Length: 280
Ligand code: PAF
Image 1 (cartoon, rainbow, N blue to C red):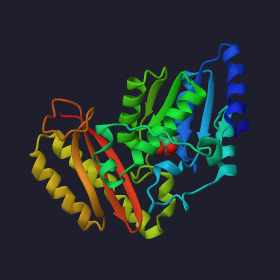
Image 2 (image 1 turned 120 degrees about the horizontal axis):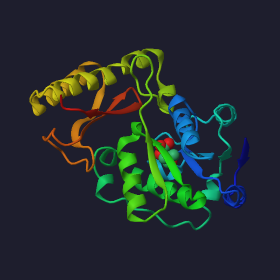
Image 3 (image 1 turned 30 degrees about the horizontal axis):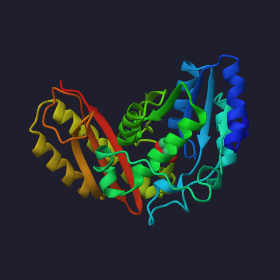
Image 4 (image 1 turned 180 degrees about the vertical axis):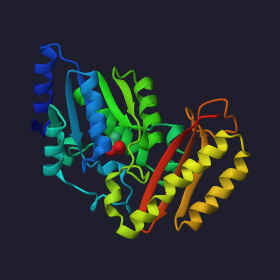
């Protein structure tokens, strides 16, 4: 597997593939790869002839007091994992390649970015949107693959691709979970062994909440009880919300697709998770 670090080398490699008529799948990542990322590489390999992964810890999507400096970086191990997973090419640009001197453009993803994660992490989705649009324009892939773990991010990317007529098909991959249910995330590496044990209470509570909602139990009461449960499990709760699966507006209508979304903090670590609600 080759690695390129500049837009110029990236485009030269892509041109060769295009001249051979090969379709291209892009898996954008921030590195510190886990099985969730590798499942997206797998998905790309099933759908497109060529698979390209990007690794870029995007400073624009981190707030001033967030974990940019300590975000896990493991380029060598990541390269081995990608090569073993059958990825054809890695794009790993430096920050100066993505944001050269004088860079001034920002994509505003609109109302979807104002709620939930957007309310707790102001500016986060503008940073995500800007870098994803850049990656899509730099690579012009047939398909781009994103995990459902970052459900709100996924909806925002779909919106942008549609709004800006970017000729890429956005493909989603299901959340990959550890044996105790915790959704895989590069940030799980921050958890102490004790916090890691505690973290399993998040998917457990989400699942219990989802079951009760799907049974038709009263939505507000179920959410209220489970917010308390999360606090009792030792988390600082940012939100536990039931939202319309397409617009993220609050909903009480389970006849339409809905999504249960949560964010909690355990020590300094923030965990997010979500589940589809399927009314029985
Ligand atoms: O989900 C991520 O890892 C990042 O937000 C993404 C999509 C690679 C943009 O930096």
